[in-house]
Image 1 (cartoon, rainbow, N blue to C red):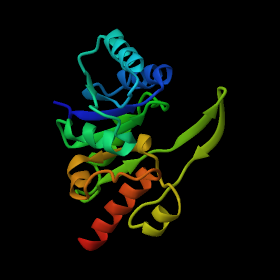
Image 2: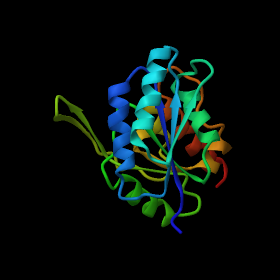
Image 3: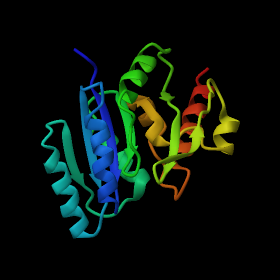
Length: 195
């Protein structure tokens, strides 16, 4: 049987974008997925809309969870990690979307990498008004702590990672920005300590 991949989608205030994001996961070429929607909205109208969107998909792989209070992106992702049922975790922000073979290609790469590989990432594009405005094509491997502190190597929507490694560094830190870079640096520091 194919390995289960958990996809954690956190949402706050963007229902139209959320529908597009979920659609990009539902239509992946890799189908053994648990799609975890973490609703961080405080506005009950938005929460009802998120529930409607999830219900519209009528997909047994979708699981909806509502935070008791607004936690922000980092802690909402941690809530999603807690609900993962396998060691493979991907993330998707509600205003992003996956290309159709993203999970399949990353899972193959991660499974064929060293046991010590905690995270793989992919390229991505910034798109505005239907046009590509920026290409994010970083090819960094190994222990690139300096690069991780200087810039965002890869945003969370570009990742596929191992849950046990995330948990070993305390998952996401509750910081107002650079949540993705913070986790990457923590993972790189862990690797350096364990050499």
